[in-house]
Length: 422
Image 1 (cartoon, rainbow, N blue to C red):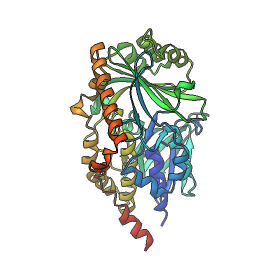
Image 2 (tube, helix red, strand yellow; image 1 turned 180 degrees about the horizontal axis):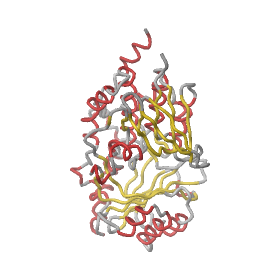
Image 3 (cartoon, rainbow, N blue to C red; image 1 turned 45 degrees about the vertical axis):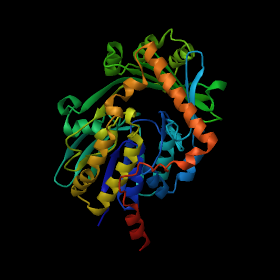
Image 4 (tube, rainbow, N blue to C red; image 1 turned 90 degrees about the horizontal axis):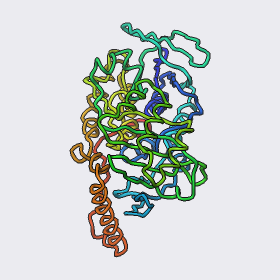
C-alpha cells in the first residue's frame, strides 16, 4: 500500500520537526515555504525542557550547540549605558543556556529533515487554493519565482505557516470571520545592524518613556552583525497599523524611526541602520485563539493554531512540542482521528502557556510609561542583582531547594523509544 502523502505549509520550527518525524513513520512529506532556502532572519530564541527532549531525540543537539549565540547574560542599562543589573545565563535572566537565532535553528532542522528520502522541500512556493474530498486534499501550488502553478493531491495538509496563516484562511476563513486575533497591545520590529564592540557578550536593554524599549542582542562572537528588537507597548499606533496592513516595509521603518527619534543611547545608530536593513520585520503582536485546530483533512500547527505572543516566552517551545505530538498521533491513526487526539492531548497545555505572566500585566510592568516608573523598575532590578550576587558569592544558594524545570507535559518519548527498540 502506498505511503500517505502529507503537505506541510511552512518550513519553520514546527514544520521541519513534523517533517522529520513523519518521515520516520514512512509518510511521504512535501514541505513548501514562501521564502528562499538561504533566507535566515528572525529573533533570538531558546530551547528548554520539555521541548529539549524532542531535540535530543532527533540527534541534533551537538549541531545546535555549535550555533549558540554565545550571549552570556542580560544587562539593563540607562541612556548613559550605566548598568542597573547584570544577570548571567539561567535563573531570572532572559538569556537561556541554549540561545539561538531563529534562522540558525530552522536551518539545522531543515537540513536534518531533508536528509530523509521521504522529505521534499519546495522553496518560494505558496498554496493558492485547496479543495477537500472524502479521502484527499487537492491543492493548487504556485512557484513565486517563475509564477508556474501545479495541482497535486495529498492525503493530509498541515498549516504551519505562522500567525497570518494562508492555510487557515483558505480552510476556515479570514481572521475577522474567525475572530481569532487577540491583540496584546504591542508593536515590534526585528532586524540586524553592524556589530560594535559594546554589543558583545551581553545583551543590553534600555527603556524609554511612553513604553518604548530598545534591546540589542549578540548573534555570535564571530558575527559582523548584532540583532535589534524594538518594542512599543501601546494599544494603537495608527501609522504603524496602516503600514502593517499594507505590508509597506518603508512606512513601517519610518513609523518606528519617528517613535524612537531623539531618545538617546544607541537609538541614532539603530535608526540609521534600520532604514537600510534588508531583514527588517515588523508587526502588531497578537495571540491566535481558535475553537478548533482542524477541519477534515487539514490541521493547523504552531502559531497558525495558537500563537501565544513573545510575552509568554512559549512560542518556540509549543512549536516543538506540538510537532512531536502531531507526528505521534498521525503515526497511530492515519486518518483525521489523529487531529482530534492531537488537539485533545495538547489544548489545555497550550491554553495555559498562552497566559501572559503577572495576570497579563507583565508588558506594562517591564515597559513603564513614565520616568518615575522606569526609575522604580531599574531600582528593583538593581537590588535583585545585588541579592543574587550575594547569594552566589556566599554559596548560600546551596541551601535553597533546587528549582525544578517547567516540565509538566508528558511527551511519551520513553514509550516511543521502547517501541523503537523492539
